[in-house]
Picture 1 (cartoon, rainbow, N blue to C red):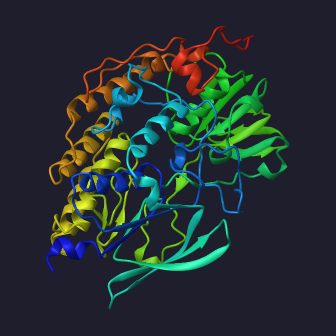
Picture 2 (picture 1 turned 180 degrees about the vertical axis):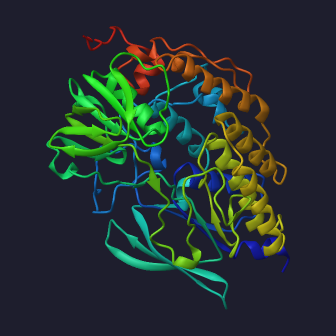
Picture 3 (picture 1 turned 30 degrees about the vertical axis):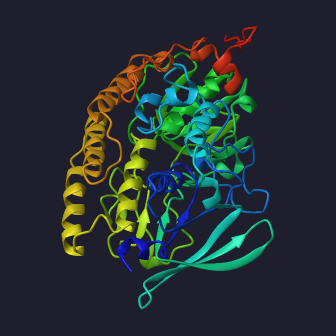
Length: 464
């Protein structure tokens, strides 16, 4: 029996059918389309549909079957970076929409794009929806993983055995929820960004956001755009630093609360109607034993992952999309293509000690990064490193990096209008179209409104 024939008896388990898990399926589908034999693939997704974070749910807390809600997606979310920076190199926006669209589409449009590529394949047959992973163990003798699963629909627990396991469950689901003295006496809403589902409920209200991350920036803008009375962002170390419009301001970190009043490190205080914790997420894998669990904070190069993908102590355990991200969909693709080639026994890993040296080299460089431009260059070089090792269709990374830097400058120039800018695709050369309505005046994020416009203009909340 040759190696190719042996591969069809291998089993690959994938945890999660978000962009990373779908990228892994797509990587194998690309080989199958060429007539090649691929291993048996089973993907487990605890939601009822694919898309991961891009699969919006109105629910918070727990879902239909009592499982913790995975997604942190909210209404009115628009891409906060140019779509040209995340475009699949094997499936362009032109391929999907058949016409130029703007560089900053809303969530339903991006979700439609993600679905478009995967619907062209038979990927759905590999996915078991409403199925959650409870526990994973690895047997040194058999060199196989045993995965304990719950079929949520029929309330059945069962197990499956795999030769390789791909963890693509993301890391923007388990909130990091800090405590501030007196917050239990706050009379208004207190929530984490994970449970934020839209700005409508905060119209005409004074909102405090704690954190200086992208989620704080975007949720603050959404609340301002949809009519909040005021938005205050409280930072721990450094302010975001944009030239904010009247109605948005930044203050140092909260020290404590007294009733509905927040007190800050600069001695100031203010009353608020709601508090939203934009304080990040934890890498959490409750289904993995300690010796298999990735332990990292959110950064550009997690420790113990060779090429940012292979768990160094056990490379048959593969992690996708665990980095902090400037690049997204196309980075997940490059990771998935390399992981596929390893599982297909086309890419041979060096020994553990040599892998450790490579990890340390990237970690050392990561520790020297000082600016956002440095971060972009670092992740660009990381993806170039992956592309050199697989046959994923190449795209012009230097042009994407230049776009990312321009995007950073656009936000500095005007945080309210940067989403009205347009960029050129590095895949097709198409220049993005201009959206029919300025982002600040566009209150409808539906795909129909975005693609086809509307007869009447929306009513814009009046500002004092």
